[in-house]
Image 1 (cartoon, helix red, strand yellow):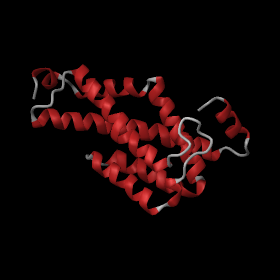
Image 2 (cartoon, rainbow, N blue to C red):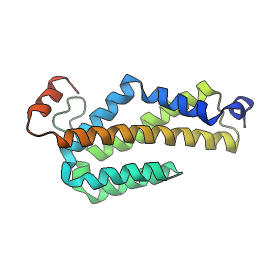
Image 3 (cartoon, rainbow, N blue to C red):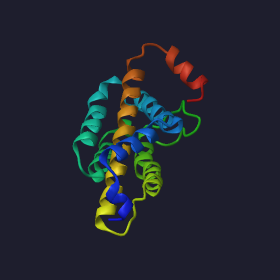
Length: 169
């Protein structure tokens, strides 16, 4: 393990992840996907979202979360539904978008945070710490996305959907 990484406390890692999750673009992306989930899955599939959250919070491996998303995409057509209201990506299904964020966007954020924290890639301990940081970002993202899903799917009528698309979310 690199000397700087050895000196990192769990609290420093949690603070770094929390700061990243507080960034506007991180939260906005979670809101977008939460809205997409509400449109695609509706209230009837709430257990799938809470299941995703439970797996993310209960696992020690990123692959468990990614495998769950892949299984949902394969099994449930609503996970493949695009969001016609999202001007930024109206062709890609919810599950595919979520998978792309978890595998690519959050991995890039984790790599940047690791660099800022001085976590290398050479030792197994460093690689393990990098994977942990990525998993913590995944947990934060999923938590925010599921909260947005719950909020949006609970809204009654088209008023909220109209406001959402007018704001360009």
